[in-house]
Length: 214
Image 1 (cartoon, rainbow, N blue to C red):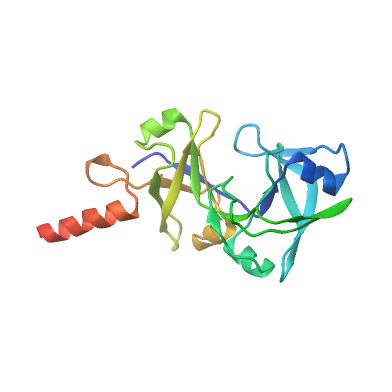
Image 2: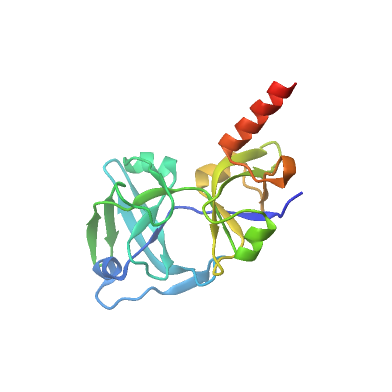
């Protein structure tokens, strides 16, 4: 069996640029540290905000630090339907042609014309771990997740490699509910013949080739 990858559930949250944060919480305001996240240098802030869309809203949305260059709200497909915005699946930071929303804080509100995404499921890992698992940055792989009566295989999982990362796979709440999210779940990258890692197309081609050989 391969390397066990911790699977973490990422509930709706927002990354903010400093200007947008100050517009909502006051000029000169800073993010207040509350708790560390699994990725080095990342944390949950004490501050919370509200999000409004054409059809609904969410209160007490978590803000993650540190500040980023651009504000980005990450939600699930279920969340997108409640807000009334299209659920656009993207990698973090890829916000072109995505829907916007209204952000509301204690000192004001702002209108985002883009920046709402459903994060593509992904694995963070270090370069050493990437070599160990025979993958590289931006590979798409399968991950097998075992769970009591809810085991499944995640396809289209993006590999993200950096020395600053810690090993973890991130899924949203919809995806976590699909495998009944047990305590401390783990998954393993799928490898088939010759130890190669596979995405959906490669797997289908290999299976079809095997059928023709029968």
